[in-house]
Length: 137
Image (cartoon, rainbow, N blue to C red; front, side):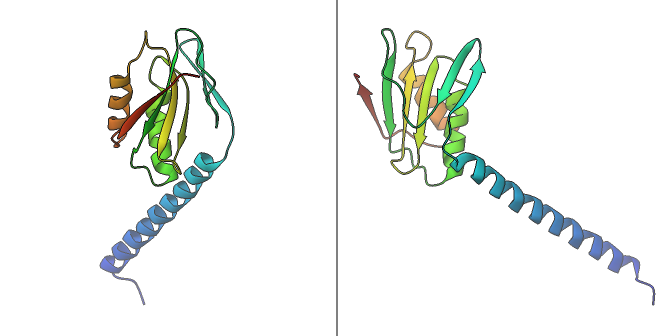
């Protein structure tokens, strides 16, 4: 018995839907595995190295360190979104985004970037800064 044209089209659509669903699930697991692994990564940006690590170093003369609190993050994807925005911001020297404490610690050069630009970058990632705490050492 031959399949009708409508039946073949329905099967093709079903196969495509299953393929897209499986691809999406794969990428979700892949991204969560990449984001959740604790490791130090160095990324060269405009001749300077941005270091992402669990501990942001103490500020040197001419640098400032702040903690952006109450961002509203709840998952590794939130962390990835905030990290991506901070990573590409000129003047950011080091950062650590922590979902558990719902905060981002940032070491930056105030001559190149200010707190308002940091808040704007966080807002572009879809989050709002609830409080800012400056760290002296």
